Image 1 (cartoon, helix red, strand yellow):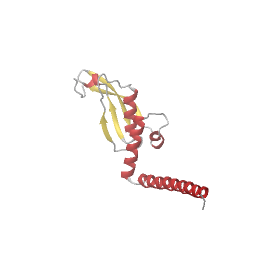
Image 2 (cartoon, helix red, strand yellow):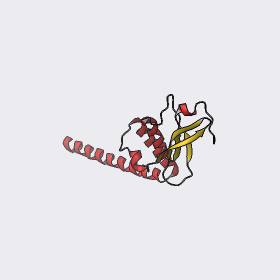
Image 3 (tube, one colour):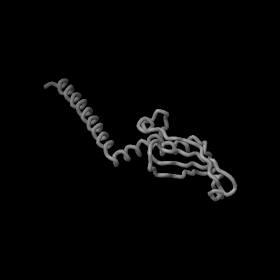
Image 4 (tube, one colour):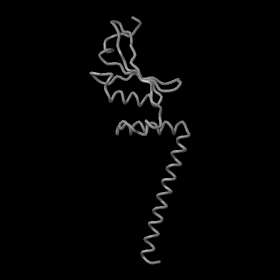
Amino acid sequence: MNYSNRQWSYRWLAGKGSLLLLGGLILLLAWLGNTKTGRVFMHSGLLVVDLLLPTDGSLLHRVTQPPVSEVVVIPVSDGEVKAQYFRPAGDGPHGALILVLGYPSNIEDMQLNRLAENLARLGIAVLVPPIAGVAYRKAGAG
């Protein structure tokens, strides 16, 4: 076998090795997607990627259902507070989280709402109240 034939065979092996590696990765992802732990692992990774590299057509948005988003009114001791509520699509039960980040907190903040929406896509109900509305007030019926 001369040098050119040997070089061709290395390229052929490298190409086959790449295909085998890609095929193995696809099988691993398929296996992970069929287990609860694997789905949690994959969704967590997609959340991190989406938070670091936000795009409208992210993979997380392609593989999960959009949440229901609405403004809710919470009665407090001296009036009302409007908060943004993100509810996962589909029936529960769902975990829940009150997300208050920094001051001044604005329920219309795009990054805060993106985080809340992504968490709701992963099955967590998220309430985002403005911090000024909850800082020194007691929630209640009136």
